[in-house]
Structure formats: structure tokens, C-alpha cells
Amino acid sequence: MPDKALKILGVRVDNMPRDEIEDEICAALQKKSGRKFIVTLNPEIILKAYRDENYRNILNSADLNLVDGFGMKFISFLKGKKIKDRFTGVELTDFLLERAKRNDLKVLVVVSKNSLSAPPEIERGIMKKFSFKAKAKYFTDPHFFDCEEAREAQIILVNFGAPEQEKFINEYRHKFPEARILAGVGGAFDFLTGKFKRAPKIFRNMGLEWLWRLLQEPKRIKRIYNAVIAFPFLSLTRK
Image (tube, rainbow, N blue to C red; front, side):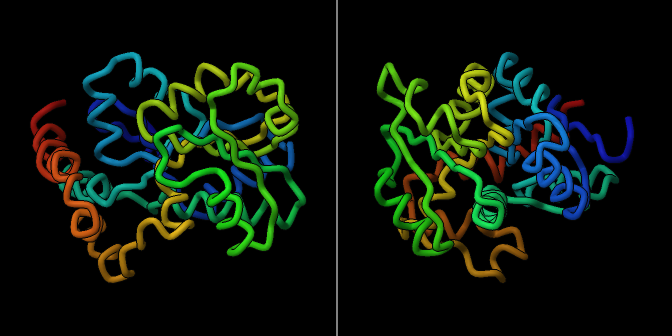
């Protein structure tokens, strides 16, 4: 297996430096390569895939599986492998929106009915930060794929959370005829709309985003347990 293609609990991890990741994304945006399905992997996503073969197969069929969670970097280090760079869902979202503004590309954010941030809030957040107009829509209308936004968008960002967002992209990617990038970005827009504050840089550098998020949202304790306790244990004890 080449150095840039690792596996953790059966999930392929594309271990690439940031500049190579950005080059691949930009090539897709410029139509120099085929459309790309991008996943930002974290310990919770990998655990879900470990327990769900269908979901694991979907992740392994994605075009780019990026390293989001710090726990993946730590576990890889313990196993003698070095993760080159992390590329979080928040960073991917910002990168794509910046490129969309620069290249006048159309963006559609597909929103879960359970999302903390409503479509108008997401649109205002994007406009405020990037001075760029994007569209956000709930995926509830049976005629969703007939709307202009779905037919014309070149960047599709899905905020359902895992595993729903990756399963949605896998099933419906062909329904977006102009799409060049499709990515699940979880709660990235909840930071953009101010629902949550992103961890200070010192927390991110130390891999303690989970602690910062737990302090803001104590009900996430089960998810934090899976990421901080269950994931390392299984990763170190399973082949």
C-alpha cells in the first residue's frame, strides 16, 4: 500500500500534504479532472463505518478521504505512520467558498431538517464572511432535484452529519449534472452562523477540539466517548 493510502479500521485514508489536496480540488473545480466526492474523516465517522459495512464501502469509494480528526493523527503515529496534514470540514468549507467566489461558481448547501442553522442563516453567514451569494435549501421537497439550484450548482455541500450526508451523496450525486465537488461537511456551517464558537487555535493544535465542543454542548458526551475512548481502543486492538 503506498504511503499516501493508509487504512484505519478498514477505511481508506488519503494521506496527502495540503498542497496536493488543494491542487486536486482546484483541478476538479476547473474541470481538469472528473467530479470529486470528498469526505473529511474523523474518529466518529470511522467508527460508524467499522460497524456498518455498507457505509464503509461508500467511504472507500469516495474520491478523496481527508484527515479531519486529530485522533487519527495520534493513532497513526502510534502505529508508525505519519499523517502529513489535517484538512478539517471547516477548512474545506472555507476553501471551497473562497474558490467559488474567485471563480464565480455556484454553490448549493443541502440542509437537514434537523440542522441547527436554517438555510437563510447559512446564506447570510456566507455573505457576511465571503461577500458571496450562495444558496441553501432543505432537502424535503420531492421536486428538489428539479430546482434551478440543484441543476446548476457546481459545488454541493451537504450538512446532514455522518453517515447520512455521505450516503446522500453516494445515492444522488448523479442528480447534480453540473457538480464538480460534492462534500459532506457536517456542522461546519454552525460555526459560520455563530451557533457554536470554533475552538481556539491552541486547543486545535493540541487535538482538544473535542473538549472545547463538550464544554459548549455537554449532551455530546456519548459521541466524545466514541471518539476519545472507543476509537483509539479499537484502532490499536483490531487489524
